[in-house]
Length: 423
Image (cartoon, rainbow, N blue to C red; front, side, top):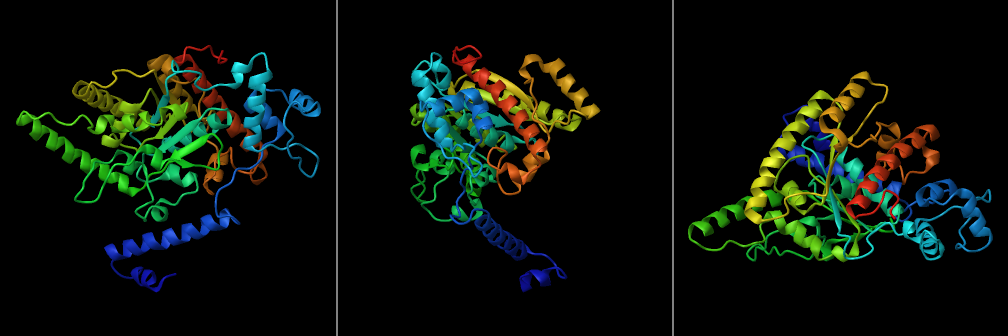
């Protein structure tokens, strides 16, 4: 232990000590990340089994084997036991073959098929921390990428938890001026401070996950709240002097940024911070659909009620001032951290369904040690090596998460005017 930190244990704790704590943790976490991702020190994606590929693509395991045997599907590697294993790029190649050759080829093209299919922007939101917003965001983004959608994941939380899942270290990786984050795509130009808004395309990063790009966040994003307050004050002064205020106020900045890359993606998943500030409101204004995560407990439901009340009142004022969209394609409530054997949770879930009806997703995201154990190494249940976890526990978590993503996927398809099976 650092001698200065050791001395602090028996003395008063000042700001300098807190700073040293932060530095010590950052260095330690960096070392742990390097150990976890050796030898490349970058995250990579594992290979998938025949059964997993069958579930992801909808092609039966027998059909997969037959098509490989008659060489109508690309060759893939086999493991030491002779079992085929698939990289994510193999899954994509199979999907492309099936889209060209199958009678139901459209089922293998789940994303946008023309200009009539607008970009779907989904914000995962709630007031309360601990409602599994980041867990939901990362798993939905990865699942849909595996399913064949072109996905952009945006970290809109200054804590950068979603960025960490992608193998980034917000406390270290964004210290250099050329290390861009979502802040750079929505900030306000300030020539004096040398701050200049950048195109979102400059900020987007490719990931180790095919079909999945991401936009990171860091603590600098918290400056957006202060800067927006100053911009709104300046606009108010401009109106008092009969000067037309600028149209690029906070509510439309993220939407405009996304507009420049709209053609590149089918789905955008935004992980919002656990408060209703200007950053979250920017996401709400840019969204076509909302996923509200809620733990089925009285305090959590009460907090969500306050969030919905404040969000509706604030968005009504924003829409009136900016003439932005006044409705979303859908609003869905996702019950998270659900324990099906817990009586009070069962009652609260039933209560939510009684009050909110079909807006509550039928599927719930189960509370699972598999999710938390995978998260210890900044992995999801789609990334972690199945051998590292108890098989039955992992399968239960994957089944639950797949069911949630499939249900939301049907809602997205319906917003594009398609039936539940994507036809």
